[in-house]
Amino acid sequence: MNDFQFQNTTKVYFGKDQLGHLHEEVLKHGKNVLVVYGGGSTIDASKAIAALTLTDTDDFWDLVEKKVFWKDALPVIAMPTIASTGSEMDKSCVIANVDKNVKSGINGDILRPKAAFLDPTNTFTVSSYQTACGGFDIMAHLFDMNYFVNSDKYPLQFNVVETLLKTIREQLPIALKEPDNYTARATLLWAASWALNSFCTSGYKTQAQLHALEQFSSTYDMTHGKGLAIITPKWMTYLLNKDETVANDFARFGMNVMGIKDLGNDMDNALAGIAAFQNFIKVELHLPVTLSELNITDIDLDELKVKACYGQDSLPMAYRPLTQEDCLNIYKMCL
Image (cartoon, rainbow, N blue to C red; front, top):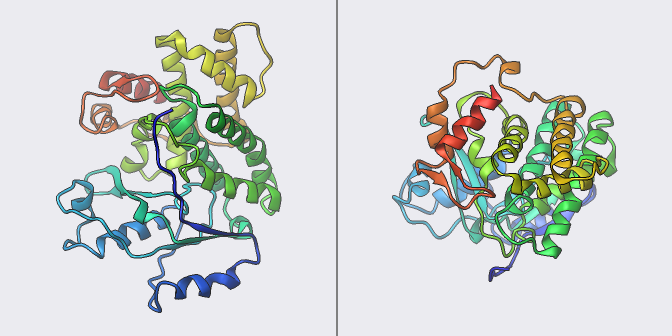
């Protein structure tokens, strides 16, 4: 396990009767408040505003591209209304640059919200489509940050992550069928926070390959989770065909998360697990598994492969290193 420091300073108020404490938290930091409201990316936007306000530029991309140095930020108090990004407890923000058709961001402990109010009843009215996309985003965070990483599996963090994945797989379909099911909604909301609050990622150094590949939402009017749902099974299939050493990990995922029966060997279990996962996405979550289902055919894959590797030749620290050519081949499978 790599050396690490862990300190999460976000105070969480969880439940349907916690908003009465809001004034206590606000008054710790001042009397003037900027209210930023909207969907799941709103907290990230708030963090960007909080950091940008204390710099000498009004262009957030100056911070992303390190043209302007930043080290401080205004305090943020978060109230997520969708179970998805986990931004309410994490130290980063990701922003879409519509002019450059790319997503990127900044990170630092100062960006962690000072307090977060997580009321599951606020997610009752989230549509089934956005609930499914948000839930898949949580799973992708867990895949990228711990479950599928090119590192030893540290039992404590890894087993927590696998339990979170299994729990989301069980509770997400319930939330879709029963939007006001408090237990399912509360479980998803809390799972989103734990996916990115730094506990599960402690001791790991990796590159988030699925989030790097998911460039569709920066190019098209597409929810991030939908793009991830299209890419993830294709990425798994591509890796399995290219490198059989992933079979054991994919087989474990199939049996322990997707609940397939043991077929006797890793390769068969891995194939069955991927098939069950894609079926889960299409049949239970009602999300697309190809771009053609969205009538997207005019797409510059060569441009996307460069973005996926952040302009470099590859993603060398991914679960399995991906070159630009690998990314291109995965994109072709998504058509």
